[in-house]
Length: 269
Image 1: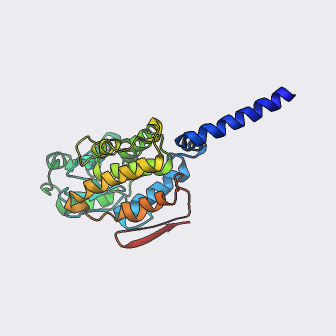
Image 2 (image 1 turned 30 degrees about the vertical axis):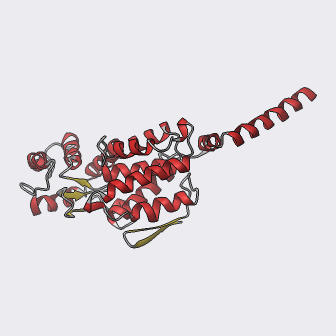
């Protein structure tokens, strides 16, 4: 009995000294118990946060039918995370829709969407495409295509890389929002390039770094990328949202949340 008590006392003292000497490990211990961004409740928060920036609304489920040219050089922007004709992810959505429901109302625009890649052209699209996108958004199949492409290209990679880097829900969300805006890739203005720049100044928790310091470095690198492009020079979705959560040490992205983006104030209770 005395041996058992001594062992528990020794382990508790050892653990306390270990965590005091290596505080980043405290983040990891807590992180193991925290819900990551892929749990339904956290994912819902993430969808609302991104929708506040992309669509000026927390009701992200009403955005399947959204489409317009926002004059950012990417052609049409549409759907729940701002798929664009210029970057090709809008094409991916419509191709998936054609695969799952052949001959759908958007199938006739596939050649024009292929030609629109890497440009802001409306050629072969125009008002008819806008009308038909909105009509397609009434289809459960089309909505599921948007959901699945969002997860495949943006959400799932963000959560996966966040876990590899030892980040909790907030860090995973920061990755997700960056992927939505900047897209995947390794050039300086894409997610991979932004992360690479952050890694030059701070280590992530998985490599022994401090979670807050690393995320601050990542956001600094992202802001630099945003300011390099006129269409993204408003950095409020970083400074008045993500940095607010980071400064309050809300690494688990727990509600209630309050933030500002593009001049509007939002809250999730």
